[in-house]
Image 1 (tube, one colour):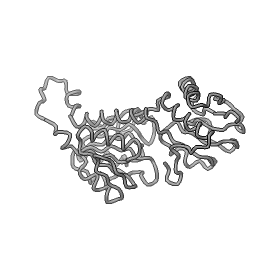
Image 2 (cartoon, rainbow, N blue to C red; image 1 turned 180 degrees about the horizontal axis):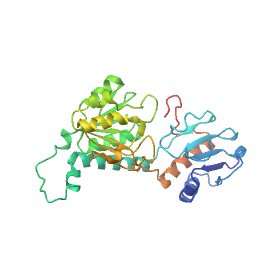
Image 3 (tube, rainbow, N blue to C red; image 1 turned 180 degrees about the vertical axis):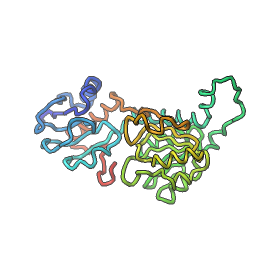
Image 4 (tube, rainbow, N blue to C red; image 1 turned 135 degrees about the horizontal axis):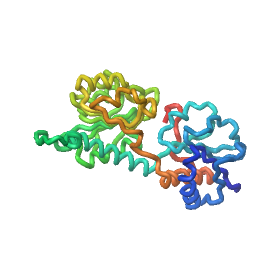
Length: 313
């Protein structure tokens, strides 16, 4: 068997971070003879370890290519590439999942407990009048029940929250009341005091939070979006914040990143902007996912985490 050639196609500064982890993971997976490289003749490349913001955008010259292995969980910047004819695997990584769970749970608890009033209210006023409900009396809805959404919903249910979840297809998750379809979306939102968005960015999910769906939420609901910027109609959210129907929005992702300095979100008193940090791909655990898929490709086993490009995820 010829040793496979693996092209690392991401920002060059990421090479130093990933190379040692990839080599260790490939060795552990039984592919230690692989040629892992930053540069190669396209006609000799078997696998591309890929970031959508890399220089590789035309896959046509890669005539021996077996698979493209995405380093990011999101694949919306790849699925429409007409030159990509081989399997595309998205990143499903336990490190990424754990990081997302920690970030979402942290901000859900922050809003649930009303921490901002005390963190920002260091002005000599003794604010002891507001007592939050117990978690079991706080409705939290997770939109999107893929690997990340299911993990977040399960973690919040484990803390006692009354968790609902919505996805396009029916799901069954212990401790979580699940909904699907348009009617199910409205029902999932109707009791949601906190909404967490973890849907992929597809034509079917764009602006899923809009004037109509925001109106389904109880007054004073809070939004947490670590999913994708286009999931929210920004104008509709700002209007709902201005009227007080939505009490606060914590947003980690945006249509344009970095978020422009003149964007209204920066100055809005009821918006928290975080710089797309909810969960980063961890080189050590991501490399293990990549190495396993390369081993599978070399042994004839089916690839893991393949993208259905008709659905966009």
